[in-house]
Image (cartoon, rainbow, N blue to C red; front, side, top):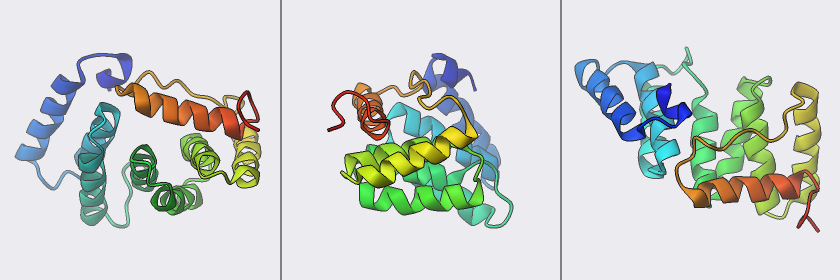
Length: 160
């Protein structure tokens, strides 16, 4: 997606909205729309669109909707709602590092440091890249929430 590379996210949302207007049963399109809305900081729409995707395609998944829903709750500071969704994503996609990253940051923000560090240890078994780029997130407060949580989870500065 071009929005991942700093392109105009509004234009990308417009293209997906047009595709969904033409084909409202396009489950993958609802997932992509949810991701774009998450990146744009439109958290309510991101969750709504992920849930539409799940209704349209309950068995055959297109993307990682539980990770999207969990991550969106995380950025809304709804950590207690985020964690179960992220755990479900990990259960369904145990090789998808992003769910581990957001869950570690979530546990850190909840001051559940042992669990956060255990998730980081599991993440290290999957990938050497513990901290991904956050350039796709358009809201600075979303970037900082994630990065501060990851610093704490990884035992870095400010992780007392």
